[in-house]
Length: 190
Image (cartoon, rainbow, N blue to C red; front, side, top):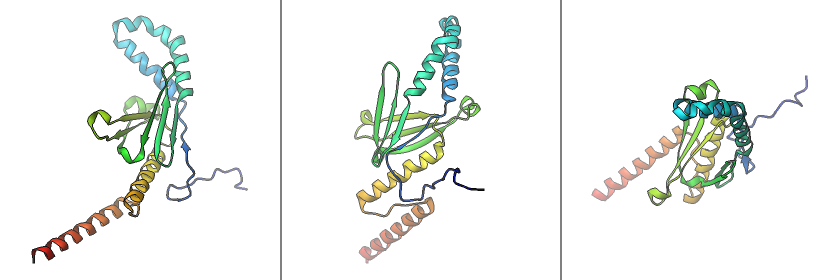
C-alpha cells in the first residue's frame, strides 16, 4: 500500500514552522452552545417561555453563525482570536505577555469532547491584564504546546538565552544558576 494519501504528522519539536498557524474549531461547539444557553433559559423564569423559540430557530441560527465567525491564529509574536455575530470582538495578545494557559473541561464539555483553553496575561497594571478563553479547538493540547514553545523562543531571543525545551532542562538550568550564585556569594564573603 502506498502512503501518498496519508496525512503527514509534524511534531512540535521541528524547527521549521510556518506562521501564521490557524486552528480549526470542533463543529460540535454549535450543539454545546445551543444547550448551554438553553440551560440558562431553563433556570430563569422568563427564559422557560423562550426555550422552544431558542431550540427551534433562533439558537440554531445563532450557534451556526457564531461557529462560522470563530477564528484563531498564532503568529510568531502574538495570538489573535476573533468571534461575534452582531458585535465582533477581536483580541490580539503578545505571546510574551501570556502568563498561564489553563485547560478547563467540566462535565458538559467532556460529554461533547471539548475543552476550554484559558489564557491569562499580565500588563503594567491590573486594568491592562487580559484573559481570553478559546472553546472547542481541535487538538488543543498540541496548540497549547505550540504557543508555549513560541513564547519561550521569543523570551529566549529577547534575553539572548537558548530556549528551554523541557521541564527537566529548566530545572537543571535553575539549579546551575543557583549554584553559580552560591559560589559568587561565598567568594564575596571571604
